[in-house]
Length: 536
Image (tube, rainbow, N blue to C red; front, top):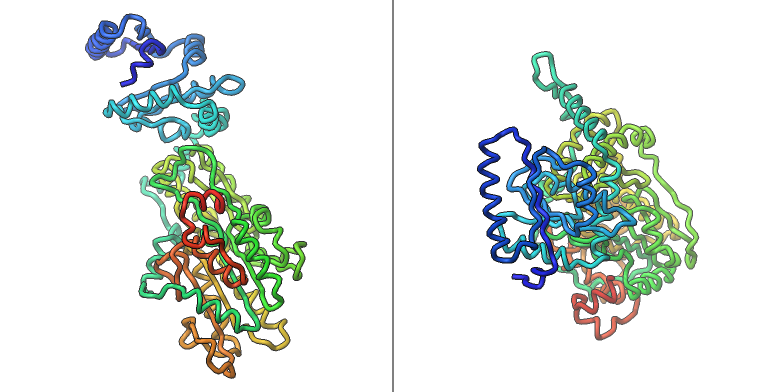
């Protein structure tokens, strides 16, 4: 299929013969020799460098010579346990050496460890040939990116550490057994895990038949109101969330940018200039990332770590004083207990890492082998649950991440606080316009907090708790409260309205701020140019 390589590539094959199973080895050697002779007969003697070595492993000097001279390492067993050869190859090609490419079988254990390797099915010959060509034509930049995924992990895990980890896991597996060998599970189910499945079960009681957001009605209500509060989620709402794809494991390093497009930043700035507005962006991200993206918008309120810390600067200013909650948890003690456990799972799961925010601990495995990462997460959560049972914390398991957070912490906490603060500092004017937007399970508490605030306030009630879209031309003597809780994407939710995607959010914000979206962008945010210009 690729004749261009016939005179430019040599296959080096070393056949190890340990001498422990003479009959099996003789049969295997017979088949291998026949294959080698067939290749040499058809393509010439020089296309393959074949040698039989009667030992269980090549000497280290011969291995290093091979790793230094070769551009691609192919390990394609149909069934194999743990093989350290690919790890050794990656380490031998570390900087300043030029990187090589590893091709592994999807049936080998090493495939779950090396994130930079190309994966093949050894039974699929066409696939194997295609990936060999890809490895031979791969750019230096991509080779370096793939090496960078694995080199730190490989360099920090010598054979002695592997041995210690295995012994530690055996000890951990047997330390919780009774005298008769049965597992002691008393108390392990005391704390429950907050997961996507549980949230879906709760939300399944709601009817999916809820209307799309009428942007014109929101704009009319906004213009008629005298005291407004806008609460907007960050990832997935204000900016597009990077899709995980079919597999969580990334093919290349790099993520989409996390800064809103300029037109959205301008709209937020215009909204914040209006003294009748309080605008708050809530994120589960760190303070630094949130400030890097939005910290230059004067007067914009920010809340990071799922609302654990928030800041509402004075109008027209960007200087921030951050406030936080006392959630009744000694977080330093939680970290002291949890971090050794998280570090243990990070060491055994290449591509995973620990994410620390003000009031949460996260173990992220987006860049790992998806099955291996999910398997490790299933072991991690019960262990954390057991060790942190003395603390008032809960566990959130989402796709690609496990988080430990204070039980009282949720985004609704900061939303309720901001609404109450605005209502108490407006000289008796009630909050008569609320817009709350979010895209995932963690935003549901924001919606319910809006309903709770309205029901508890002295302002006009909002029916039975659902938000309303009243015609602003009606008599305003009744001082209606316009509350719009909006889910990004139609799904099971407590929100009263939905928009199709985060690409609809700019239309709403720009319209409310009195701006206009350029005609080239007004019809769709989905064109390739729009994606590149606005969301890169």
